[in-house]
Amino acid sequence: MADGTPDLDETQLRIDLAACFRLAARAGWHEAVANHFSAAVSEDGKRFLVNPRWRHFSRIKASDLLLVDADDPTTMDRPDAPDPSAWMIHSALHRNLPQARVALHLHPAYATALAGLKDPTIKPIDQVTARFHNRLAYDLAFGGVALHAEEGERISRTIGNHSAVMMGNHGVTTLGASPAMAFDAMYHLERAARTMVLAYSTGQPLAIMPDPLAEETAQGWDNDHTERLTHFEEMKRILDREDPDYAD
Image (cartoon, rainbow, N blue to C red):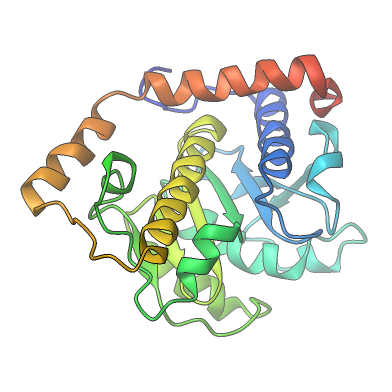
């Protein structure tokens, strides 16, 4: 739908989430066989799809995705259990956050470089960085690889009502009403991080927008989601031509 509200059945969710994995691999955002994406299939968000343990993003197909329940404590006893950190983070997101219909967690190069700075904030120095003005949560309490439930619970508390989080010493996560919305947010978040890293590399002072201008620019992004949805559809058309088995 034009506002990004989910109206997808499980089959289409599988196809679109698989597209996100393939596109992330093409963009070089993935990290070996780590990182994880998920998409809720139930109204309450607790039943969700997630990638199988340690499958390379470039090979993931729609039919490969696991269906799990955030309230099922036996999930990690399954023979096909997901990666432990995927379970700890994504089960908390889908259990606690209504906006977490789709969650993409990555360690892309520029965003992760920012996450390693003492001040990882994205400052409004152009229209893409301004998209995240007052719209990005910051989790600066990294507790190591997310192998314990508390790490996921803390991350979800930190996100609150935001739709993206910069995870200090870790990476980034974007949330969306659909795979299209979460993907577009990740694309622009990594672009914003790249702009910040390149601007810092010059050693020159940053030309930070005044708050009113930054807010006006951010609201411009908020007002129309059509471009975001079209962006994802265009990227899927490229996959349909060059890498079509993602939808199998």
